[in-house]
Length: 227
Image (tube, rainbow, N blue to C red; front, side, top):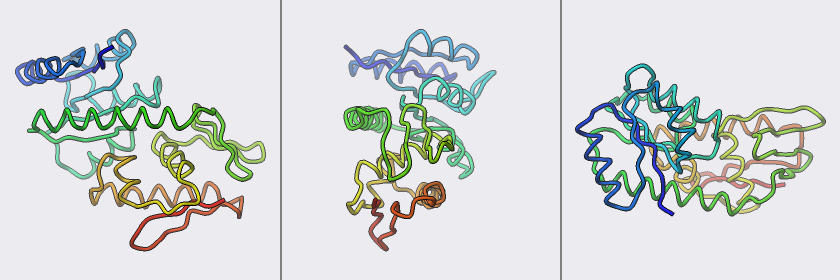
C-alpha cells in the first residue's frame, strides 16, 4: 500500500510539479488549493502525512494544523512557507507541526523529510503498545495526552506529550540533546534548541510532586530521566 500525502498548496504551477514528482516516487498525493476544502479532504483521504503551505486562501496552514491535531495527534505535519520570521517558525511547532521547510526548496529535501517523519512515526507506534505509562506516582495516558497524579489531571500539548514519551523511552540513560531535537522537532536549529529548554522546564514543573522523578541536565551532552 502506498503512502498517502495530503498536500495543500495554492500556487498551481508549483503544486503540479510537487504532486507529479511525489507520485513519480510512488506516493499517493491528494492535493488541495483552498483552505476551506482541506478538512473535508483530510477526513475522506485519511492521509499518512500532511504537507501544508501556510499562506492559503480562506484558511491558513496554521489554522488547518490546529484542526488536524484535534482529530489526530500522531500524523506528521510539514509546513511549507516563504515566511522567515522566527515567530512563525515557533508558532508552527507550538501548533503541533513536525517540520518546517522554507521556499524555495528542493524536491529531494522534501522527500527525505517526509520519509524521515514517517520512519519516526513507525518507531513511535512500535515502541508504545500500552495506553497508560507509569511514571513513579504519575500516570501518563498516551492517547489522551494526560498526565495524572492523585486524581488530578493535566492535559499536555502535542509536543509536551511527544517529549515526555521520548524521555520515558530512554529513561535512566543519558540522552543526547541533538537526538531529542532531531526526534521531536526534526532538526537541531538554534530556535528549536531554545524551545526544548522551555519544554524541559515545563515538564519538570509537571512532575515536581514526585521527588523520585527527575530530568537531569548533563551539561554539554543532554539529559537523563530517572525514576
